[in-house]
Image 1: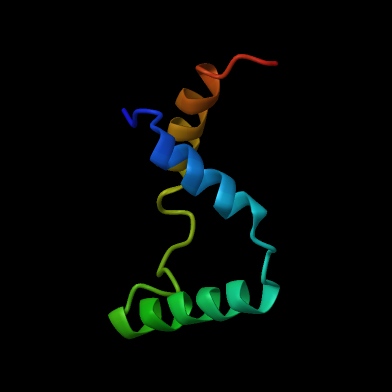
Image 2: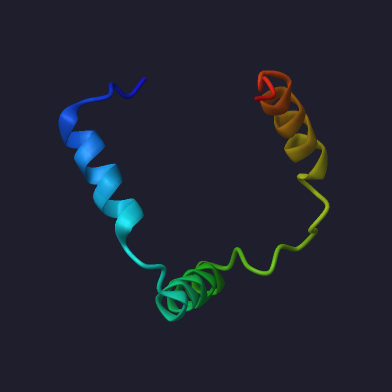
Length: 68
C-alpha cells in the first residue's frame, strides 16, 4: 500500500494543477498503439478472448466499492 507522505501530497497537488494537454495525450496514445503493432500484439487476434476475465475482474473490483 502507498503511504500518504507530504512528498506524495505535493506531487499530486502539482499534477492536478497542470492543464490537460489533449494533443500530448493523443500523441502518447498513438505511440502506444504503434509500439503494440511493432510487438505484434495489436490488433488482437480475437478481441473477445479475454472478455470473461475482464468481466470477472470488474465484478470483483466493483463489489468492494461502497457508494458515497
